Image 1 (cartoon, rainbow, N blue to C red):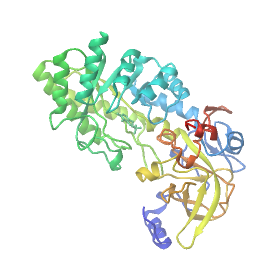
Image 2 (cartoon, protein in one colour; image 1 turned 45 degrees about the vertical axis):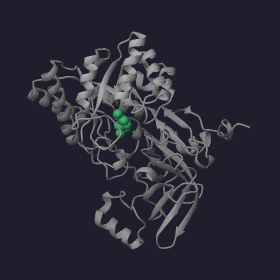
Image 3 (cartoon, rainbow, N blue to C red; image 1 turned 90 degrees about the horizontal axis):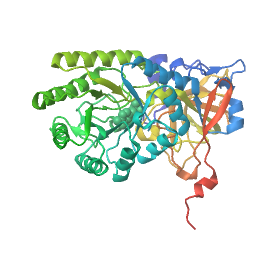
Image 4 (spheres, protein in one colour; image 1 turned 135 degrees about the vertical axis):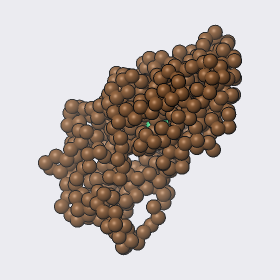
Length: 461
Ligand SMILES: *Cc1c(COP(=O)(O)O)cnc(C)c1O
């Protein structure tokens, strides 16, 4: 959003009513869909998570910190596992991965998607059973493919002809028959930001359906007979709120499956429809529950298969954001408050684009609340910014905060579990924040804070 005159912005708020930015009058309220399930505002006005007061957590672990509500995270894993009980749920590790999270998702019965050698190494080091690991990526190296094959991963999702060459050669050399899927680009544009929509055809992922590349890829894999082709894969984007887009993508992918059956007499036992299920970042977002998603996808696949005379394949999905995104909030401390006359109030926190680049990168929206106390002050329109040397270093574009927000206040930004720590940088040599898992009154570090020594650890000389 561009800079507004204060008046224009208030007019816009007025037009869109309290649904936008929450209710300006109640800066202390917590909208349930934005916060992990154990977060409450206690009698003293401070937030708690997992039974721990955020003021104590700030004192113990410092700020900024990512606080993971472990009960909430596990409940989201279970909700997907139960809703998709007749399918496979691959947690998309790129959303956020560390060894503790790998163990949690394994314990909750999920499988895991990785897309680099680094993510695969974390998964294996944490003891993820290799057969429950899927490997993605549009440019997997020879080494990455060899590692995946040596580990015995459950499946590799093929993304290019060169990769088919590489993997076929590795399989021949090692006398193995890796299980693979072919990633199909189906030409569905999910209703989301351009840079995170990944299934319109002008993009780097997958084999084009319309151009015939997907069919050609399958045909050469079948002709070689070296790789064990389990089925087709489609991932259409991120932050998707309804199943309409999946309706189109499933119909197209299954149409290809039927054409291949007609031409070659081969039916594939599996189908992956990807991830991208949306979450609430602000009061404007209204995500579907896993049970609704599962019901929708199951019906879509069944209807298409019936119409095409195909047996219903085993479905898999790959939620990342929908599992970890809402389970985490970032706790910052306010350092400065600057009222830029007549425009807005800039509230600077002790992190910024190095711990949450999504606002700068995708124009993403977030919300925020003063976390260490309640306030009776009237709301003011604020912008939460970071400490980096970059004008675009914005964490929350617009939010109503109490007019008495001041240096030293703790500020919490919900919905930061996905693509924040995993995309964090050391810009300006700011150490990356820790991740703290809180449950039943216990807080434990699962990723420690970087130190200045870490920042210099790679310098030579
Ligand atoms: C990123 C990605 C996902 C997960 O997307 P979310 O929006 O986090 O659910 C799933 N599958 C593939 C292939 C991806 O690239």
